[in-house]
Length: 459
Image 1: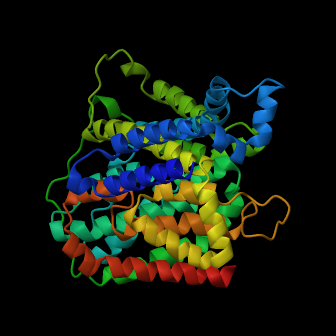
Image 2: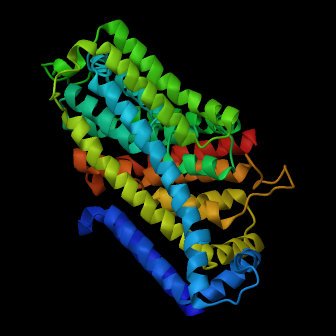
């Protein structure tokens, strides 16, 4: 059993290395995640009987209901009681992401964000930096980081002519998106998983994250602003795509925006009132927005072909990558838990470290070289939620879960390769590693340190 466990861990470590170096090896990380996720469960089946008796002895006895244990019964238990749990959790998150991404696409397709292109055109580069950062933070608090980054980089590309300035603005977009994503339970797949698992609640989580996230964002922008001098080198022409698919008046666009963003903020309340999965609330908001879109575009509903934008085509591809990637890493993290590897790590940390802040440092370093999504899933599966001691760091809304979300977000922004959003920026702006090391890394570390200090003072 130990040999199989070591092989499972080795396969996943190699897969995480391949995913983090996607820019070098040119292998799609979603494909690597899916392949490794399937392989480790095949390996798990080699000693599934031993793993079940170690992790799920009582549940397996109930499943047998007095019958004898056989190879077939072991495989059926793994399929219906163990693997199904991780698939259901992953699908719940995926349905939520599909709904929220579609809502953002509908807003963009109807010209809601076109006004931002004109509004953001200003002379002061530092003012532009702050407004861009705040806007990214707000959008990312409602929609996943990758979609937010693609949207905001598209806006910056239409406004800013200088490649050097776009590089700087790309840095603040990434950090703002990651901090905004970890600020709310609906802003990123990592915080959404924490909410789905029940270890955090929306209000308490945001209340605990607001000061560290804002302190980190302000610190980073102050440090990054020193690289900007003079005005924004803007493009001379405003590109407008308001064709047949966005003939909405200004008041209709405002209504559309209020329903879309307001509906996203209503999802936690929907879950609290009905106890239904959050993705049902997201689907409800999406369906209502579709009805409103049909009413506003009533005269154009007969048009068979709508003008499609590059943004929509990009997000369709990106959305599929997110789906396949998340399923793969969820399967991998589940296999690590079920084979006992994460339990062993948790026992060692509690015996030799037992300090949440050191956990945060380790998580940040790990997230800088390994994608933050599997790191969060491993950190979540490593420690069970404390049900009896409400003052514990591992209780619901405990300090550990907030530190997990924050440190993985900031660690993911440290080397770009730690997030899908960072990978997207690397591809869009072709940032060089040497430029990043000189100008970017130490500012992220300083901002992360300020956030941890605020955590320490506020907790």
